[in-house]
Image (cartoon, rainbow, N blue to C red; front, side, top):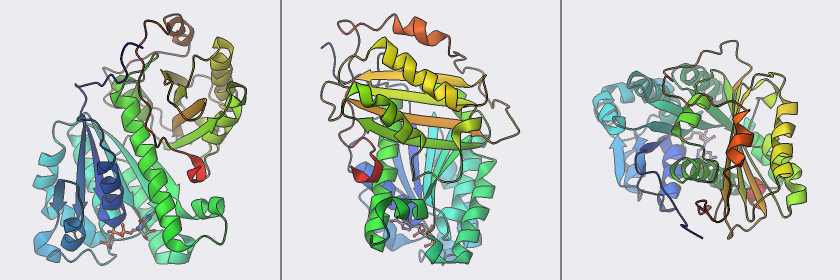
Length: 365
Ligand SMILES: Nc1nc2c(ncn2[C@@H]2O[C@H](COP(=O)(O)OP(=O)(O)OP(=O)(O)O)[C@@H](O)[C@H]2O)c(=O)[nH]1
């Protein structure tokens, strides 16, 4: 084994948690000791909540407006607070290569401030992805409306967004699950997805997904899906793929119309070429858009707990617009390159990378 972890020092990813839920998620990421390429920022209108966090970079927004007492479940206040502190926000994300926003939508701060943060990233020409949760049905119509309005507003400035539905999560856990336990579970999934994404971008594998691949995929307008799956044997890898494609935590979107897909395969031992090609063919069969761009990544990790783990990011779903955005440097590899790259896979010469111990799992398995 040549090298266990090979990180990309040139890439700066900023993960921004906005509002109570977002800040909790970022705080959980902080406890994960991500690489130096990751900058974690917690943003809130609630000073007491910010003070309770371990994350070092905290920004209190709208200090004059709310006096540090929160946005009172009002997205307009969340937006105005962000506007008041726009300068701070610009300085915080300037210089990043990728910004990932995470928030629970339905309240005031996350819902109101996130679209402005995304707009700032867009204006600074930074690739921006948002991963947000939708409220439980039981939280009421008003919160749901706020959340949907927030999604409408963030859709345009971000390059891709992913919604995790708290209700779908509940279904996955069974009706008897308690509220806080469901929130915790959702936070765990959110955190693991983020860890996984960040690791995929900052650590290199045999067939590497890099920032340009990521930019290509994010450049397709429309909804995105992020899914994970795992299997104990290579023979069951198609089940892992189906799990990833049907992740019950991700709401609304169906993968059929995706225009871009990142397929990241983590395996304990070198997979058969037929398995690898078969998985990619299987994805391709699911997609009605035959010109879909599939960017594969393969990482070998002898310490993996399962034989196979799969991460799927699909973008450009159900959107009429297929215009790549500020993507001049993006790698325009198409599916044909897959086999060529595979020819370079050599377990003796390749770089091994480490896999996060808490790689995302469905229902916390
Ligand atoms: N999954 C998950 N969702 C949460 C959690 N906390 C809150 N939410 C969801 O996120 C929505 C917004 O809650 P917060 O993040 O606390 O709200 P906020 O953005 O800080 O807004 P204000 O409190 O009004 O300033 C809620 O309606 C919940 O659906 C959490 O810990 N986990």
